[in-house]
Length: 207
Image 1: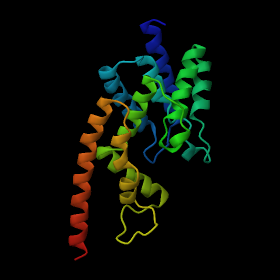
Image 2: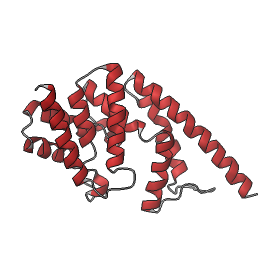
Image 3: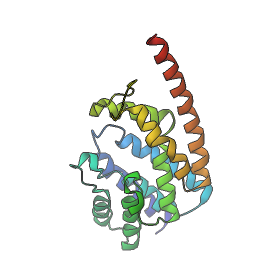
Image 4: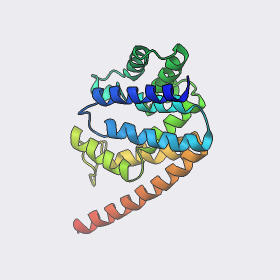
C-alpha cells in the first residue's frame, strides 16, 4: 500500500471515529483519541514500527469503549467492521484488531502479547492518563459518574486521589518502551507535585 493510499485510509478512519464518538465524554472522547495518536506518533518516531498500524490502532482503540456500550467492550469488533468496510487488507485488519483488543489496563493478565506497534499504542494510551491531562481526565470522570476527587476519610470509597495511587502512579513501571517510560516519568512527576500542593492547600483550608 503506497503512501497516498495509506494516508487516505487513516483519514477515512479518523472521520468515521469522529462521527461515532461524537458527544462521548469523561476523558474517552475524540480529544483523547487524538492525543493518543500524537503520542503514538512521537513514540514510533523513536522506536520504529509500522506507522500506519500505529495510527489506525490509536484511532480505533476506544471506538467501542465498554463505558459507553453497556459494559461490553466492542472496540475490536468495531475496528474490524470499519476497516473491512474501507477495503483494508485482512492481515492489517487483524493486526489492528488484536492491538485494540489487548491494550486496555482492564485486560490485566488475560491480555495477549502485543507487537511493537501494539506496545507503542498501549504506551500512548497510558500516557494520556498522566500529567496535566490525566488530572483533568480524573476530575472530569469523577464529575460525570459522581465520584469525589478527595475525601479525608475515604475508607473503601472510590476517589480521584485514590485512583492516582491505585492505578495512575503504577503506569510508568508498566510502559513497554524507553520513550514511553521517559514521557511517563515526566508526567508522573508533575502529578505528584500537583497532589502534594493540593493536599497542602486542603489541609490549610480545613484548619
